[in-house]
Image (cartoon, rainbow, N blue to C red; front, side):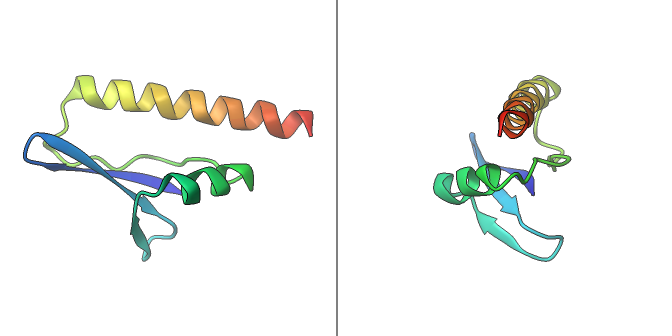
Length: 76
């Protein structure tokens, strides 16, 4: 699963790529269910309009989510 960020005016919208062909609007419930099922986050897709600082913060968040997912799977 990949997250794709799209800049729209002053906001950043989030999409979820289930496969390379299937893109959906971000839904927390679907996102959480995929994480619970053990599906890690892969490389994030950024448009050119996303700043390096924004990318850095998003990458930090994704790394933390993957680390929590790995820890939870090891405990089960």
